[in-house]
Structures are given as structure tokens and as C-alpha cells.
Amino acid sequence: MSDWELRPWRESDLAALRALWANAFGDDEEYIRTFHNLFLRPGSCIVAQADGQAVSAMYILEGPLLFPPNGTALSTAYTYALATDPAYRGRGIGTAVYRACVAASLERQDAACVLPENESLYRFYADASGAKPASYIRQGAVSPEALAGLRHGKAAPITPGEYFLRRKSLLRGMPYTVMSGSFLSMESYTMKRFGGGFFSVEGDIAAVEMDKDQCFVKELLAPGGDWMEVLAAVAELFPARRYLVRTPVFLPGPEQIRPYILATCRAGEQLPARTHLWWGFAFD
Image 1 (cartoon, rainbow, N blue to C red):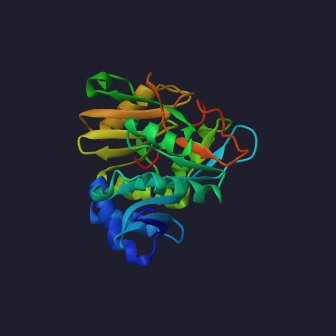
Image 2 (image 1 turned 30 degrees about the horizontal axis):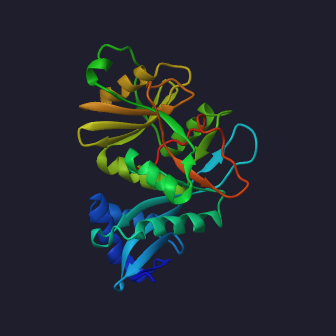
Image 3 (image 1 turned 180 degrees about the vertical axis):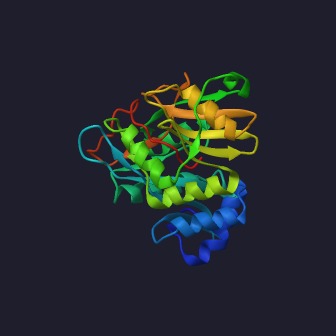
């Protein structure tokens, strides 16, 4: 018999949830509070309790709708931010919390998705739930020197609403996702706080977030143009040590292709071809 139990979160867990998050991910109180205000709802978090307190937790967020080129959209849950108190690791508690989140997700949605924090964790999530790659991305790092001298237009800031209307138009006929309002609110908050935003470059688009001296272009869509020229336009607004860029596999972008989102599907459901599905940016 284990000395811990799984249960849904409750209001009395808030202090423990904040401490778990801060210890695991290093974010400050304002960031954690913003996330909780947007996403903590009944059934949105599962905790493991031991010694009278929450010692592990993971969140179940409303995930994006997945739109295949033809057919019915699939609903998803996004399991996120698994954190376990270091004193309670090595007992299988985190694995049990994640599995409980997947089971709860599949009661309501077609698929439970997760983005591992780093490549070493892909095997953990695959072994724990049978999750498989649901999306691949092009990703690469570009130096400022590689962008010097490139002809480019002007990167013009646009609102989140304008951005996602253009995004939908650019991706029409391709398998892609549509994010929830809460997700977009969190992304907008992060960009505003740390630097970045949504931009259009002669019809192409880019979602930008600064990470200290690195510029993270979380989504760059340039179906009919040169993605490096779009990046050069972004770089004019955001001088950085390097630029980390992500684009869909089926559009121009960096040469490196790597797995991105993992998904566990409800029995009988099948995701679009994984090499073609563009998930877009996520919390990472």
C-alpha cells in the first residue's frame, strides 16, 4: 500500500501548488498567479498527497482543436507542468499523476497531449502512457551574422486577433491547430512581460518571445516567401545573441526536423499524419 494518494486539487492546495511550480520551473509569483488565474478550474489539476500536503501536481488545460485538411476537428487536452517535490521523487508518484491526468483527459477529449520539457523526457511520457509523436517541427538556431545584408520588409506589430485570422488563412487546407482563448491570453501576457509580440512581414507572420539575450520565434509562417527574410525583419526589432526559429515541416524553414507534441488518443481516434500536423507554439 502506498503512503500517498491521488485526488483533484482544492483551494487549500494553492500554496503548495505555487511552491511546487516555483521549485520545479523557477518562475516568480506573478507568473504563477497569472497562470493559475487563467487555468485553475475544478478538474484542471491532479495532485498526489502525502504527509497531509500536495507533493506532486500536473495541470489539465483545454487544448487546441486539431483541424485535418478534410474531416472533423478533434478535441484535445493539454497536460502540463508536471512537478514533484524532490523529497518525494523516485517513488513513481509523478508517473501516477501524469497517468491520472491522461485518463481524466480522455474521458472528455479525443486526445491527451504533452510537450516534454526536453528531449530526454520523451521516453518517459511515451512509456508512461503510450504517447506517440503527434507533430514534428522544423527548428534551428540562426546567428545575427547570417541575417546581415538580407533584403527584407518591415515587421509590423498586429493584435492577437489579427494574427490568428492571418494564421488561419495561411494554413487553410493544411492540418493545424486552433488554440483556446485562455492559452492565447497567457501567451500574450508572456510576450508583453518579457518582450515580443505578434508581427506581420509583407503578409507572412511571426510570433516572437524574448528569453534574455535570445529571441525565440515560436511560430514563423512564410508559405510564399523567404523565411530568412522574415526573420531578418524580426531581428531588426529584436537584436539578440541568436534566434531560435520554429516552422511547420510542410513550409520553408530550418533544415532540422524534430518531434514536438506527444499524444495519447482515445480508442478509435486517430490524429492527422504526424509529419504534417502543425501544432504551433506551446508553453515551453
